[in-house]
Image (tube, rainbow, N blue to C red):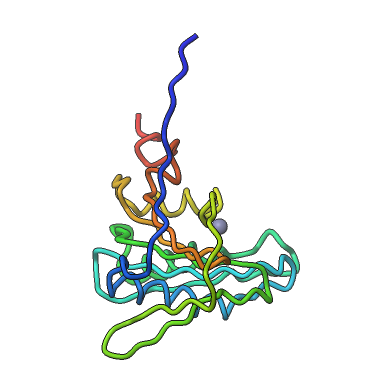
Length: 182
Ligand SMILES: [Zn+2]
C-alpha cells in the first residue's frame, strides 16, 4: 500500500509583518464580528474580503435563525455580497476571519492614524490550530477562487494570534467546478 502525505502550512505573524491592506481587512472582519446574530450557537464570526474585481471591502457576519438550518455564515455573506456586485466572475483576493465565542473580547485593538497599527492587550499564547473556515465555507470560498489555490486566508485567533495560510493548504482536497465537467 502506498500512502501519500501532504503538508499543511500556516504562519503565525507578527503584526508588523502585515501590510496596511491586511490590517484594514482584519479590522473590517473584527468589526463585522460585533454584528453577529448568534443567539443559538453563541459563536460570533466576522469575515471581510477583497476581490480582484474592485477595491472595496465586503463584510459579513453569521446570522442565525430559530430554525437553525437557515443560518448564514459570515464568509458566505461577504462573498455573496461581492457576487451581488461583480457577478459570477468575482475572484477573491484575500479573506480575513475573526471568530470567537460570544463574550470573548479579541485581545487586540486597531488604531487608524496615518497608518493602521494593531495593539495587543497582552502577549498571546502560542497556538497549533489557526482559525479556519468551516467545511461549508471552504467550498464557498473555493468556488470564487477561480482555481487559484494561493488565495490567502488571514485570521485572528481569540488568543490574539494572527495567522495566515492559503486556501490550498486550508482546503487541500477540494471539490470544485472542474469536478462536474464531463
Ligand atoms: Zn462557515
